[in-house]
Length: 182
Image (tube, rainbow, N blue to C red):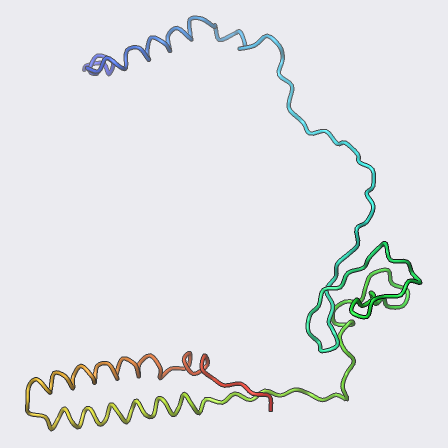
């Protein structure tokens, strides 16, 4: 067998081998690279002074029930008048935290429930028209004798079938349902 080092005909490998031999000769394995012992690097805790509060934002609901972001201004005095557009934080009795969004919502309006109605009549009508068009094209195709007109009708029929395949499914109906408050 031939040793690997002699099988390489490239001269670029020889300088790298010589440099590796020099590093092992220069420092014996018993001596460390530096004489000073290495200390592990650690983070150090540096306490800071407590900073003044800049206020607090919290999520609540406005009078319509829509989500709204409220701001508690620490600089506003307790007795100072509040601008009409800026609501004050609502704190439940004895608690130090503002009300949760469920509690901060608008009061009940007599227990009236809101109902929504979904209407797919437009989609059903569109699909029905496509099916009728497909039937008419198939009837014309069966009656036609001219080859060029047959090819044109077959292309139209393929387009209608493709469109019908895309629209006659539950996903399309759900996407194009008209929702109204009933």
